[in-house]
Length: 260
Ligand code: KIV
Image 1: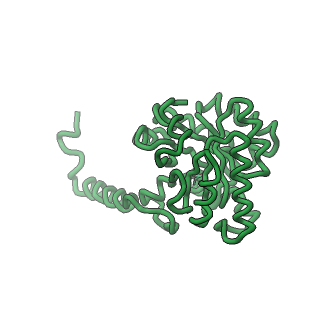
Image 2: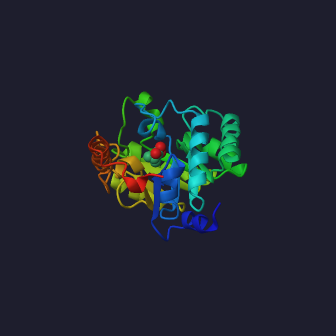
Image 3: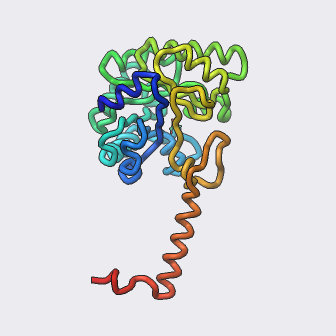
């Protein structure tokens, strides 16, 4: 693990920035600008075209993490453990070891709170760095019948606080809080000493994460409320592509300077 990044994630001194990447091309662009690159299982939706994250496999995650590692040589790389790959302690350890050995990831991320604490403990006990993920957990979308914001009542608040504590105790180095009401995300962040990284959870978490294709406007059919668009990517590409097609049709490309 890169020492500089290790220090960033171990302290709460500076807001942490994390972005997803799934290939070497984008990873190379993002390298050293952000603190952490997450090879998220959002890969399934953003790039594989699936309706949720559940179909992505361990082999898919390893393949993409290897590519990201090649592109981003300086940034801390976290690989999501896909749905169904950490059902027991033994299976989680076996699969996390595969991720470490085959992809070179610096850490793994898995969804779940108190109920997954034993698994997190097993991994950290065996020298695997674990990022937790609680609140709205996309891998539970079919169980919950949709993507449900968390922290809307006292029970949910109590559960989130317990989950965060359990993950911290189990050795997680950091926790993603997804889709959590802002005041509850604040309470959770203040209740633990490891950093929290929010997505759709307001401004009081210790860092933020966004899916790159959402923030750069490449996934343009729908924009979740929590996403800030930093680029109109799809529009820019489509316009450039139309220009290329016109150039080809009108004989403006290739020109002499493009020929051998
Ligand atoms: O898969 C993913 O991209 C994630 C982030 C949204 C946190 O888990």
